[in-house]
Image 1 (cartoon, rainbow, N blue to C red):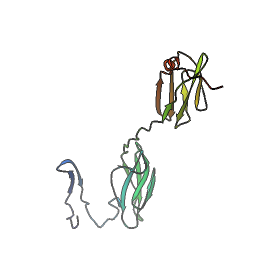
Image 2: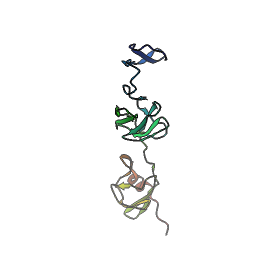
Image 3: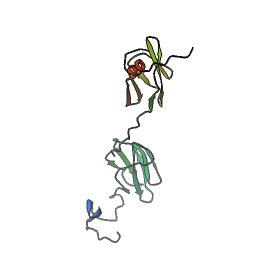
Image 4: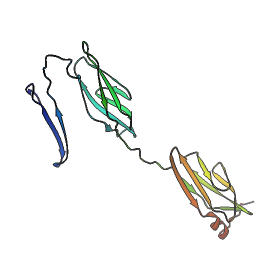
Amino acid sequence: MTNIAIGTNVIISASINGSCVSSHTVVSPASCSNVCENPAITLSGPVCSTSAVGTYVVNYTLVSGATIQVSSGTALNGVVSGVASGVPLSVTVSLAGCADKVILVPAGTCAVPCQKPTLTLASPVCNGSTYSVSFYSSVASVTANAGQVVGNSITGIPVGTAVSVTATAGAVVWKYRAWLARLAARFPVQHPI
């Protein structure tokens, strides 16, 4: 919008198919002769990033001659990017001859999808009174409640004991409860000699 009379507030609304309406009121400046009265920047709200999961971006437009500093992320070419989800953003705008303006953008909340590690188990192999099982895991952190984890195998599991195998990737845990003890008792496979 252009040529709005001084003293006239403007309400800007956006909607999706007539519902889910978002409205903002733009308060008119008292005068356009004092360039220091306005913050010298236009900001969007936080928008979840499609290229960096768990972060958000904020779009901005500066008036000619203004500079920007941000508390988090990187400001470049009209976009503040790389701000971690849940972290508010402080934007400082400087314009020669004016006091710096500090604007706080509320934190964006951008979910990080759960990426469970891959964990697969092979058939058990009997070794007398114990059995072993090989596994594949997409992560290095693998534990078992019975036997010993050695490389990509769990060895020394007493026959008749069920084993639970857990793969952990950061805060994401994937458990595989194997009833291999019953399989080992029914279908014993001996190690080749």
